[in-house]
Length: 588
Image (cartoon, helix red, strand yellow):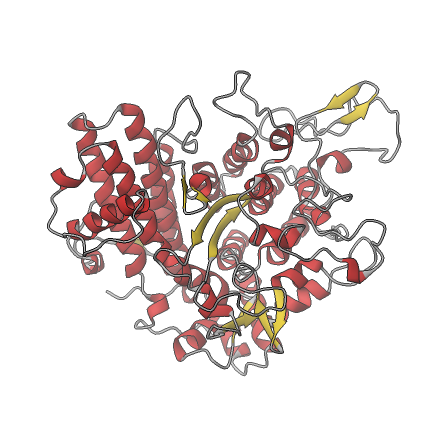
């Protein structure tokens, strides 16, 4: 164990130095006293830890998407991928192996142990310790949440072990139910002493927020607000979950180094993490858009790497990128690990193992845009035909040119997309809906707060003092989106738009029980907005468990396999009607 962490620390040192490679292999005989000497070594350990974490990207996406309803196998897929797709997983399936997750968890445990020693021996200040310990602790909690989602009853190990296989020894590390795991994760994560992101700027600078090889590290590290939100959402603590999501939704508007606490850049204050409305004049936004005054021409759809909705998956880390992405880790051809998604998805220069499910394509094509076009343009950006084959495109825009040909077969740059503002808004809306704030949930899903809470939209010259805001009693549900001239208002949320409005699709209706109807619409929207980004299986499991309705999950997987002509569709549905069959085998 020590050897692997020592190597990770050396990797971190390399990433933050001018050297891109070492002339010789690292010496694996280093002791903790030699690698945990000061805060710079602590930073190197963290960077090395995240470097190892990136090795989970392929397994994470495959498990969360292929097991669900939006991703399918191609003719090139091997038996292991086919078994995952048909929920016929054997213990030896490498994608179902929990050891890679536990290997990173074990490294987290080792780093946390040594950080405690550093604090005791005064090799780190209290502030430095709190920030770094909290980051690593939160990463461990996120990893355990994934382990629980996929394997169900698992061992919860918080001390480093000599070998990863040791965690399978039930006599030493008994397994606990997923619900009990959630309790443990909430208790531990709540105890972390620092829940804000790493500070950057002139007042406090950790040294971890920096630039390397053209990438800024500001979004490299896990966001603890959304982690706590997700843990409580899974547990059914809806108001607590919404409170944490709200902190993230507004945090980026405040600058620790600014004299008045606010960003001097007004756009950043009003738009970061708040799903702002489109810039129809320039299309310099992250929304579905058309060339101005040509909105009735399908050929004027904005479809490039520098403007509109598609660009969030390809553009540089400018202010617009920062307004949407909460957590994203880059793959660069200049350093390890390599980008696994080109091989997984690309039909040019890759193995083309996985493809969009026909069910996902049909979902986008069943939507209606506000200009009357009978399709959701997010599908046009998420999926394209490459050599006549449907291809998942979100991970490939930095790899191919406009003709969908590889720019350079050896240059496979890209990113692991872990979390973004749209997901946070949908999760907040899910929590608010279950907490009785259905109109607010509907607003965030559809046309935004200002429009939904405006009884006379489109009327100019009105007194907006008592409209365009939720008027709820207190946080986290008291949003103010007023925007008017008599008197003049520009409230904090006045530029907010709904997720569907940013996609230019019409509102989702409500039928029957409003709570269940809105919840269904939110999960449907998750598929339209966030397809292939690694969220889907967890979304289906959480809702099915909450409703005590296995058919909610089983029917969606069945529909995918049925539309693909898979003869196992009915058998898979029958299997998934038993909750225990949702979980992968945890081989003891």
